[in-house]
Length: 399
Image 1 (cartoon, one colour):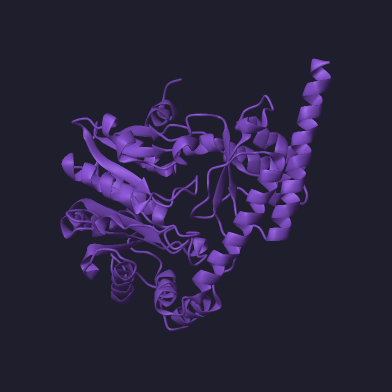
Image 2: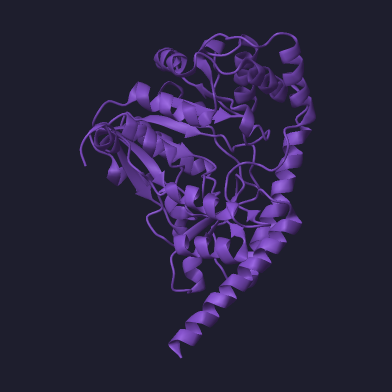
């Protein structure tokens, strides 16, 4: 193949994310599908945040804002970071972006030169790799497994560091696995980054959604890390604001200034109405976050109970709103991708294979806690029936 399409294909690599499109197409032709796929909360944005957006529109918040975001929001973000154990930032060290995902591309395009290496956890959120590839950088994947509960460790990272290593990505809690990196391990990773002069992207977008005694250690607050850490977060997950598209980057001024220029070129500014809603999220009542966390915790337990009943192993879901389950533990004779398609087509339950997130096996699926408990219980029953049907088919074929 030659011509413009050929040149484009060399620039933008297709990933297993096309499986999402295929599964959505299958789901469109089915009734009563229980969707445990996307990381989009089914919970509504809290009412006081919605009202703030409506009021802002009524008061004329329909124009461009400062490219880095309205000053009151950046001040509130700085205060919030500090309140949850993070570093101290000035408002001009923060950029408000149209979602955390765009922030990933801004960071990569600013910091990575062709041939530079970005170290990412595997499985991990796949747009990081796409952002590096768009910058003509090299993605170095660190494979994680059940033996560490899919937790990234300094010992895993160090053998992969080379003279071309520039950025290390830490997603904590991790998407898709729901694992939380223990604070002591975060310190070891930070020491390793300092030793090898790496910049750390600390993705803390799920940091408010942790369970049990787990907690997230902000990287930038550790000794010597503020000047080499970019903290990435947003409002989509903790405040159920995915459709508002508000994320942010916090980092040292010398890195924020060039990132601000690229953000301005991409979007000029984040939507004014969304910024005012985000301001209300940070400065208004916070009980809504705890209520949502408790809701996810109940859903987490419902999924785990269903998997336990099936004899299906899974990573301990310590944070975010995902359960990462091992299809191979069911001994069905099929990979996770094929199982997801079968489960959707005959069981009307949607979940995503781990290969979408760069998993080096075809053994795992990601289940989202984005349905009420009763629907999750129904999904687990349907899934158990599909598993039983597959086993019966295998026995019949063997006989």
